[in-house]
Image 1 (cartoon, each protein chain N blue to C red):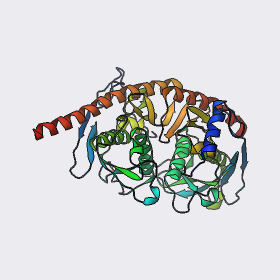
Image 2: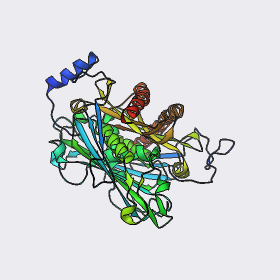
Image 3: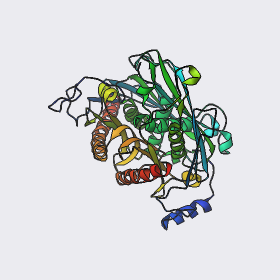
Image 4: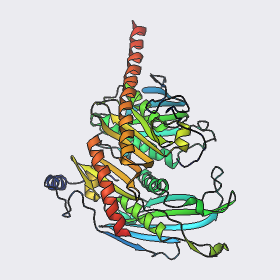
Length: 245
Length: 257
């Protein structure tokens, strides 16, 4: 959001450097049930982002003082692997990953029926294997599928995607260059059945009209992501049924 | 913030009042508490401010020291924001390294200041690639009665506006004012029941399901946002928050000058 470049991010025909229009997201691939040990898991690619999510639980809550006698808590650990970015990332939690983990957990808690599992913990692990702008959205998208794959009762499956601004134009799903040299980034996650917002952040510089447009683009795209999430789960369980027959 | 039990009587009282459009301290849903700002109270800091927002008190201090720039931004000064929720401020705060609440607070304040370009980091370059001014913003919650987001933002912004670069101390010419270009103001709303209320106090925060902080610049453009809490907000509610952030932001900008 702060860098400067002579690179043309959006050309005179409105095309972006990866050949997309302003309103197109990057190619998305979602797969459910990709890990053996986890109770639920998912793999998501959004453009060059490669993300794994795993769910353990509901299980006993540690540390115990975090237990809630009325409902389960959702704990998220978002982690970038050392080789996921161009400079090596120092392993371990940093302030950014703590913030992303917190807002991701809050977004998921809205849809998980936590009241069914008092005192328990539902643990979600998000690993960023390769990062190319938009990892928190890819991570949340994967986490929702992993929760469903784990058979955890939910009101809905949460999709997430960002909109932003680069070269002065409102764009859906910024790539690395657009994120680095652009003017704004607005990640959003919604509950698709109601369009309620469960995750929203923004940084950069936008007028009200630009912001309204960005939110509209992202909310519409969230519905597309949601269709792909549902599709991934259907594929996962039709496969299981075929195998058992 | 924390999970203290609240009595149902109090909860129902707050909800009943909101149905009538009013709050425990008599405010309407859109009213900010009284804002008091005192700058320059810490002489050992290069800039400081104490902000009182009702019964919430926050102190921010600025330290500006020469240091090495980051490799990818050799001509830019460095801005760092930290926040601590010290045990003095509330019975539920514990000592130790900053937890996720403190980190989120610091990062949301940082985002508003950084993305608005409030501090002219280009003017903080001493020798390109070698030496720049590092501007550290450290914020402490002293007394917590809700809405630490806006209190911390105000304290940081006021402290920065009062800050002096201590050039003389490091043999780099005469002291000068920290170059500041605008006044980013955050406005936080909490969703209690189905009502969005501006500048929630501690009790209101305890029973709120979602929170939205929106930071605007002098032109009323949007520079940072953060939704928090396990609840959701609708698109209409978001729109209302954006309107109010611009309107109330402008009023606060007048108050702090």
